[in-house]
Image (cartoon, rainbow, N blue to C red; front, top):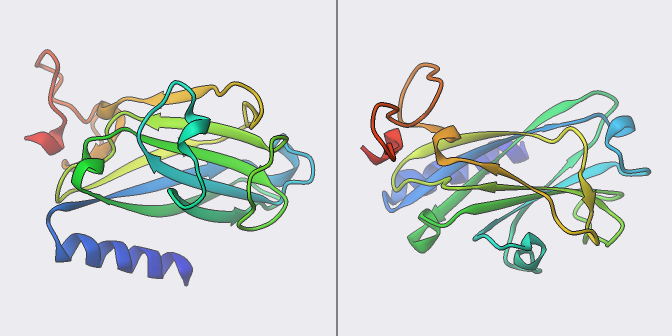
Length: 180
């Protein structure tokens, strides 16, 4: 039910104002036993606009979009919609996945974490999609962050079918299909 409400709110936001954009973020999570985080029962997915050499500095209370997903005995696929507008449309998007012991937790230094930076996730008035595979957390919150970078040409959108890239490959510095 919660996913339906999030999707409905996201669709209304896009339909109501062509100045916004929506990213459908799909997160592939491991099962609880192999998550690499003893005692973890939830994955907290946090999203914030911007980039930093130390992405930990981007995540402050109140400036992120968050969703918590229960880890189960089998790998799972979870989805969340992220709506952006204004200056956030052209900013990189940083995603943090934290394995913790309770839903909606405040991350602690010893929690296991994985970071992703999406070069460009949003295009005005458009719907895009990114799939993240979080197999094993790479570090703890206290460790220097290791970031998996996702290029703009790997962000799905604005073209049907299953192309190998989402940019016009015949051009140098090719534009994304959503920019055409």
